[in-house]
Length: 337
Ligand code: FE
Image (cartoon, rainbow, N blue to C red; front, side, top):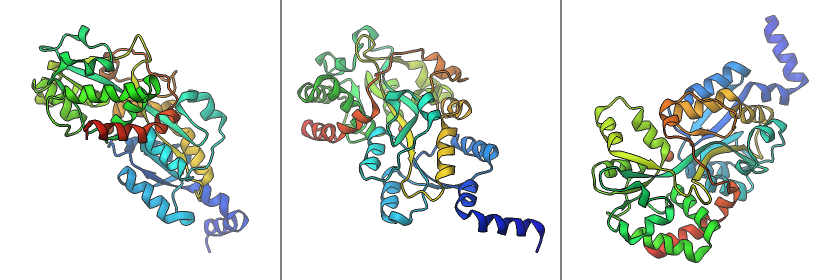
């Protein structure tokens, strides 16, 4: 037997749990951005912990973790949208993580006891510069104004991004006013809800609609694209940060937590702490055009910076999640499917 094999065997005999915990991390991720590769590779380089990554759609991963039960190999679940994380939490899948580092780096409204946001994504208004006067559009509430009849484009109301937006409006105005808003916006639709956020931005540029609701990272992606057709879209549109005199722009998050059944808890906590490090935070911003959650992080994304600073809604992310079911009911009632 070689010396290394003997020492490995000894190490395994002395502390099998610790040994395993420090070498591998099983990550279930619903983030599927190419730019995240560097984010993960950098963690392995720093810690020597190998990441075994399972990628699938958000709801599929959640199902998989539930089905695997106590024997799930998953250590960390990463996904986008506050309501999805809250659902995992309600199902009792997360273990609380006590980390001074996470508490000091992530603002209190962007974390819960069990899960953490690692990036934020602002949901703003994108308008056609030829047909819409930005001074007519200061707030989300304006989208319901009859003067925007046949002008509004949006993806489905059932999409988590829109569920979270309406959840924030419910928190702000109560159920009745939130429903009146959804009804008013739906009445102003230029076309049935379809496609993703990028499709809405393109429809605005093409003049099919005057204004759309979109996460800004989709626009920044077009701004950074080398394709002439994407540049042409960007030329046509402007961005409005809504509700700057009231609660601020609605932000959603991407985030994650450690699973209760995690076999490699030490590695899981290390990974969560790594995601809040300056280096990882910069990957979120510069790679996928999201905003860091750690306020002191300096990013280097000229296109993202060009959109300017804005006031974000400080609503705790846990509250967003609580209203999501009601938000779905409201969209169903008004027909915004
Ligand atoms: Fe997205």
